[in-house]
Length: 451
Image (tube, rainbow, N blue to C red; front, side, top):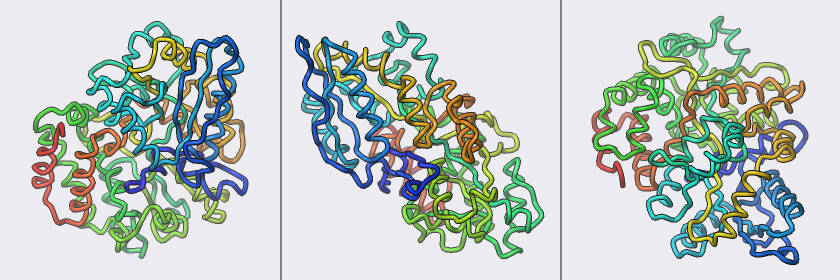
């Protein structure tokens, strides 16, 4: 997560159940089987062209992507798609260079947000607004909230695809019972719980603060709950001094109030998320709560003994803030992955890509494959595939949060440009370390808006 962003960005695999859960495939770019290896067969006889598609290695995601292309090729006698696979870091380097040189693939796999906005700025991807207007059934099939990270200046430039992973407030039920308290229903409840857990010798919240992006999740939720989704949207759109909104100062002050109240595990700034040490603190009862991604469910199930299977893991959407303007149904995290079409592709290949989008991507077979892998597809009604197994409750929770969210905000470091994202992460770390004031934080971030 650039951190090494693979765990969130190419996620999820939430491989729930079975020995394979231990890896959580949590990281779509991790442990790749091949790099840049050609995948599909040549176009069938009489084909008029071959569209290209680049995406990431890492199971089970890789196999699902491959199978979708192969089904499409088998069903289309006059066109085909050839895919090439890359490890995560290699892909991020290769795709930018290739697109900038006009040599990118027809279909561009990505994370939407800031990266997509850069492509749009440089006229490198196709405007798909009219495509979705003509394919209304396809658009309505997908979670409405997933289109935010696919939209730039009111126009849609990518198709939401694959799976969703909101950020979740997890809690240890056994610890709550021990202290005799209930899960928080507001920010005031959170602050009131802090001294109760500290008095019991239990850290209120686990946090892998060395990773920086873990701290960011707190700000994302607090800003939404205090000021509503419009505040960060103004930042995303590059409006001057957008970070000066009063809701931002309120957010920053509340975070530092929580730090000063010893709301987080002692030494959180030296704990990494990649080691899963923050999760271990929750399931061993050393911490009562944790704000983290839906992808951590699988690894806690695999590594936490009977913590999950024994019913000791609780989870909920982040609670509202008293007097806040934000809709409590909103969520943040990864609203999907995104498929764009190169504006430099031939008309024939663009048509093939659009046919692929409308007939193969997230068809019934692919949806079932994602669910079988333990993930929640970005598709209305996909919960009908969840069954009644031990993980069904969590999958239904993720589905409900994702499908009912008025706004599903993309993680800030994905939504912003690389320059803004690095400045953001640096200042967030300083905020949690109390080495920068809320006003200094705002001033520092305003300087890089639009860069």
